[in-house]
Length: 284
Image (cartoon, rainbow, N blue to C red):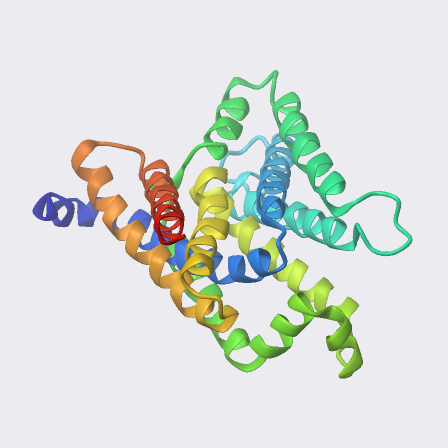
């Protein structure tokens, strides 16, 4: 099994590396999402990113007929996905505040359903476009390219550097915004900045990995880490280790059994969470 995986490396190494980098990247961001207890936010942002990609495809087909045009490139689709995921994250974060009539859950649910339905409707008369949107709802990680590896490596470096210097500030804003306000942090700006960065990470990830894998890496490793440790700081270490470890094993199994790697990793993460839930139940 291991040898088969190594033999496939020259052909699929970009997909493997991109998938592992995405797992680490989103699992780090997921710690803040889980700490804020906004699990469904990941699904809504991921789906909004898929809507952005769909709009990008539609816009590209209007603006250019040449398949090699920038308007019909993966970069443009990724930018559009990022823009819409940022808007979704900002809208969801700003909801539920004092004086707002709608709760955070209501706005997040609206974003998810609107994005899911609209992305399908926009591509309903374009068989190729509709297939692209459907692939985003599953997993497209096999199509990752060398440029994607470098992009996610850079995003990981930026994220790790930011967390190294500012993780205490971010945690205080997420866990206890009133205290953060009292010590002089501008909570609204921090929330906006964290939402924008979450949107960027999800927007770039989803076009390579699909909604399922991106959402799984965003919330499941952090949930497993939360059940293993009560310290949020420790979760920043456990979450990426869990995500990367499960993804490596899942990709090896997916290659051996000819399964989609994204879904295989998602099942592995779900089983990991089920395992820690079972352990906690047995200890009670």
